[in-house]
Length: 160
View 1 (cartoon, rainbow, N blue to C red):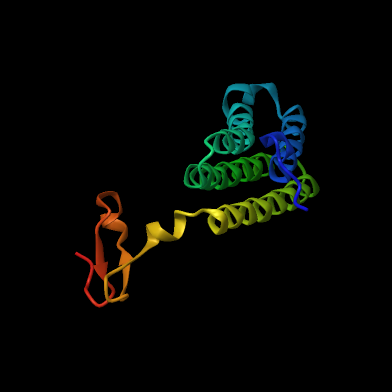
View 2 (cartoon, helix red, strand yellow):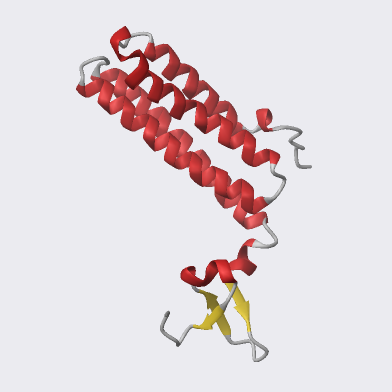
């Protein structure tokens, strides 16, 4: 019997991202106050964005919207780690602290990619957006530049 998830706060990815955010906020206390409205603000915003986007995507109740927000999360997660490398380069954190945060970053990224895979697999409309079929059952592929118009072209044709 599958467990029923009744809110985003019960998602493993959200729980792990929340712990990562808390770790980041604690680490920000070690960065000099002169960085308050520069590096500290950027780190806090990007780390908060990860959990916020997971929650917002979950609340959309549509697989494709949720996937979009999770993809945005990957960007915010990478941005957060980049800010951590800046903190290391500026000698605000140690190499051990950076390595510890990188390990957490990689775990969350794997979970996030797994969650995106789960959403894609369970989305009834995801594969229909990527592939459509003609009456002769010849595969047609949706070309990315035509995606917004929802037009398809045959695989043997060159994209326009």
